[in-house]
Amino acid sequence: MSLPLGGLAPRFDDDADLRTKIVQVLFTAPGERVNQPEFGCGLFNLVFDHNNPITAAAAEFTIGQALTRWLGDELVVSAVDVQGQEEMLLVEIDYVRRKDMSRRAVQLHFG
Image (cartoon, rainbow, N blue to C red; front, side, top):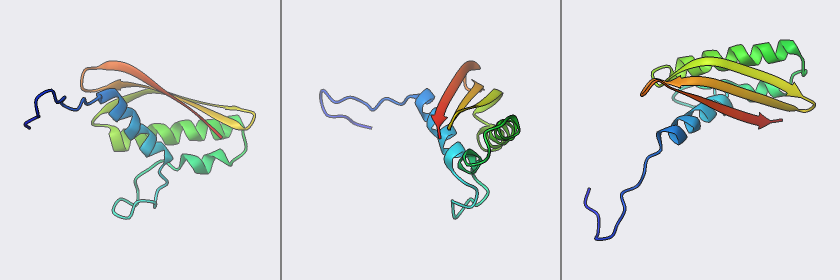
């Protein structure tokens, strides 16, 4: 790629890219993508279920399975913690990035 004098090459942030992919998996419902009907996690469907330990355990399992299936070549899921607080769902995902074996975490709050 040739750049004009004084031009900057675009920076690529591996961490931000992987976090974006994680969010895409979590917030995409299976059936939403035409060419990949099984892609996604369907987390939004669980948000409207009762806020109890059973729903939290189901969300943890679903999230872990979806991330392993769709991003398993880029990360290893270490732990998924889902907690319901009033009308909000708090999700924390701990993972190891395969590229450099560094530990990372993503936290999401929604409801």
